[in-house]
Image (cartoon, rainbow, N blue to C red; front, side):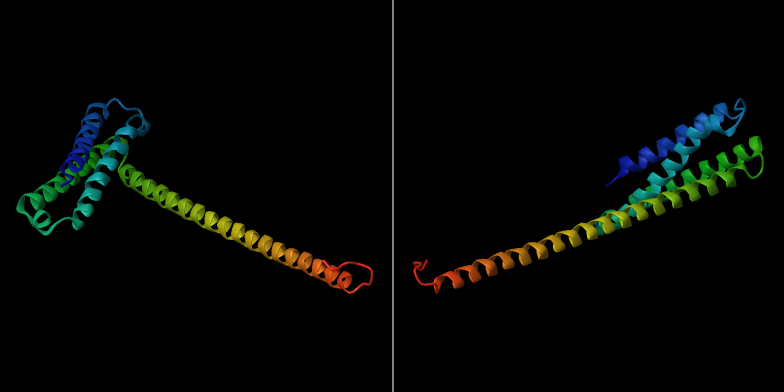
Length: 168
């Protein structure tokens, strides 16, 4: 089971929370604790990712009491820490600061997904263009080869019937 990954996610959340707690009152702007907020989100993402990964493991491991309890508790702890950070950041920087962070993060994630999709589409388009060029060169090559063979056939046919020339 991927307990190590879940524990890494939890430890990242806890480390981020500790950093934010110790620096929230001295921070002049949100940028000074932005790395810790990012760590908080990454830790939550790791926990969620491992939770969804566990959907494909064996029946006994997946539905064992220890496994289920661990996942639920870790998820609740992370949610609790996120709520605590939301309250602290909103109290320090204003009531909508946390929601602004969450919204901006969601926007950037969506933009990254769209950029990756556009890059994938561009790559597919380039591959299609490449194969179209290969087909075109193949057709030109076949037509050229047929023309050369036809030319040779015509010359051989024309010279085979001439008197005084030995047949080839």
